[in-house]
Length: 330
Image 1: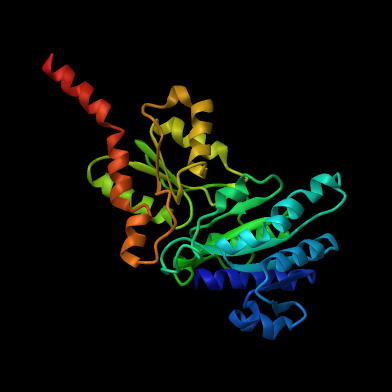
Image 2 (image 1 turned 135 degrees about the vertical axis):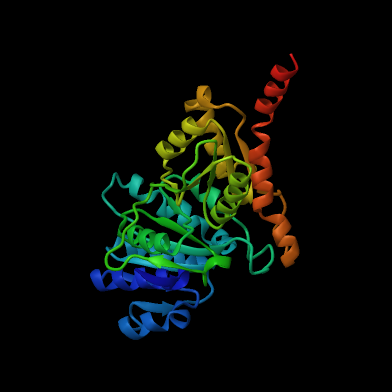
């Protein structure tokens, strides 16, 4: 095992894939400046800065991927992806299907997202659900250094475009990463904490809030299972359903706002495929439906926190407690 920051785990994954496959290249906003080690090893033909022109960056990546390259592009902040929606959604996501599978479009588009750096609303907007809704695109949003490395390697090797979201507040957090070849498959969730009473489902740094909430609940005798989705598309329905059927109670947590979010999709899946196993309604803990604030105290109030998650999970047991009281008073 080695201890790496998430930023270094991403860099290590890209370096390993560039050594393995000469078709892998990286370009984007400041990449040669931020990743000097990659520039020194692979040179300016494979690691290069670009103008601040997201549509051109993404369009060049689509063309390069169609010609056999495997580009990794960095668009810096998630809201900047709005300037490349035609290239990412209308071209990268659709052209393989439109070609009848004759072409491949293996590209990875990275961007930072989430609260923690007080960068304001125009630099901070959780847009992952937009791309989950777009046919032909895959979407990942890991929470650990090991998963950042393993999912990045899998994303680079995938023959489809992958949107790779990085929580900006986590980039310098450290974690253990296995030595040697380490791959994490797209579409496979992880159980971060086993439990029997309630399931907490999340992704990105909200997983940590769920783990903290699970610890609070355990002190009260409630044992929560924490599911880290890691991959939002493809989505690990089997893991979601298995945990929900085991506990009968589910809270879905994400920093993106509630309307049409990933949590809504999970709630619908559970209603369609696990309704008889549910003992209470599926709850969603999200950010409010407003642009992200640029004040750190307001960011803390904006993003889901452990206390709110634990309170929501505990509320799912109120009907049981009421039934007990009624039996005891009869």
